[in-house]
Image (cartoon, rainbow, N blue to C red; front, side, top):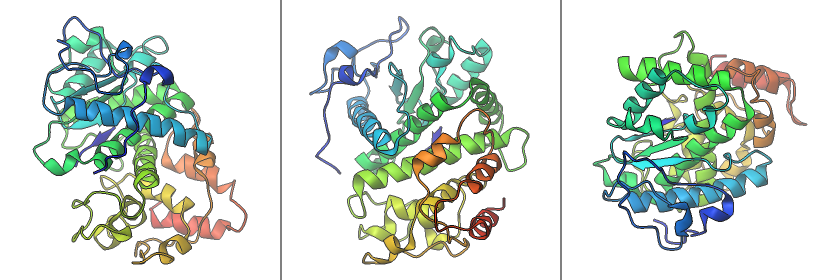
Length: 347
């Protein structure tokens, strides 16, 4: 899940070729949106709330799904499941990947849990959607026009599709426990993710740790050091557009002089970035990018595949993932360096 805070070279390919669906069949919903140019209509590429920007988002999500499939193959991880059902709407301003359709036959949740989750994430569609359960929801009820830039839309989509990929690797119990946690905190708290130390928060921290890491990783892979939009929530100033205010920089130092190394104050997504990065990449560019000033990072050369392979059902917290990675250090790394990095994040 992700809570929210110009490119012209998009790929328009058929979702039918990839085996995906971005549509939502339901007698409760009125399908009015026209198909996106360049997409075949036999997959009904968008759930049809005839609202401004719905086609924009369905097209960008389609392309992000294609990107993710391509990048996942490069990295040796599983893509989202074939037949994934994606709901695009403007009843709310958050995205999530509860994987309800995929869960339905494996480990059904109580109806009340699904309804409360859907109410929290759509603001209006709890009961109607129970007859046509989505896997991924993308809400774009924004007043800020900067959220409509292509790289922001796709960074969020990459984040959610990384959850869908994680879902295929882990246990259904981890997923349903997280949904129940989100229901409790989204309806009755100021944050969907709870707080450090809350009972059950470690499972949500693990899931979101992977999601935030992968969203930024793939956004940087797609847009590079200077083709992103102005990321004003992380950097001041956020222009001119360059490497030190890129999606990579968000992952490297959290923006704003590297003070905030966590997402939502307790999700250690940047730890995973620090396992992969190499300071030479930071310093070989102009302008150079500084490391976070509160992190001791002398670890390098982990791979996305290595991290993903440890996200099975036996891994239920950031600490348990770190323990497994500690026993599989790439050549040139030391246990002492790994422990220093881990300590920087409070683990």
